[in-house]
Length: 107
Image 1 (cartoon, rainbow, N blue to C red):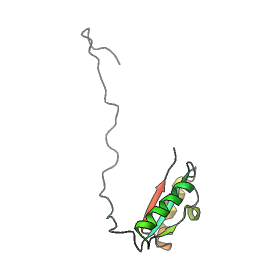
Image 2: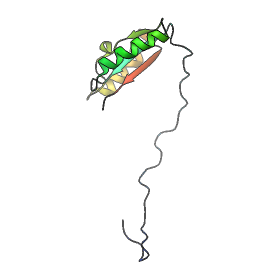
Image 3: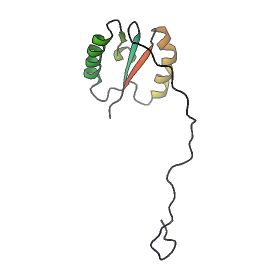
Image 4: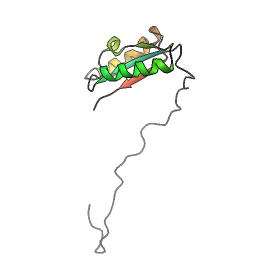
């Protein structure tokens, strides 16, 4: 940054650009997961196999009639084909009667 005068003040530029996307309303939330099908998506980067097993166990205690479609059904959501993979869910979810999604990402 270039100094503007000898008072110790500097010219400052805000580092963020103008908003590129408009805020969209959130999807309606489910009242319950009982009787619903939940898809599990994972990028294969951090312990999802362990985490999803724990989530299933705990969620079944709270919602005994919940059904899961395993992350194994979908494969990794990470990589160079990520956009294509994610776009394919628009067709796959209705075919599998998916009502909700848990998406796990490892960093």
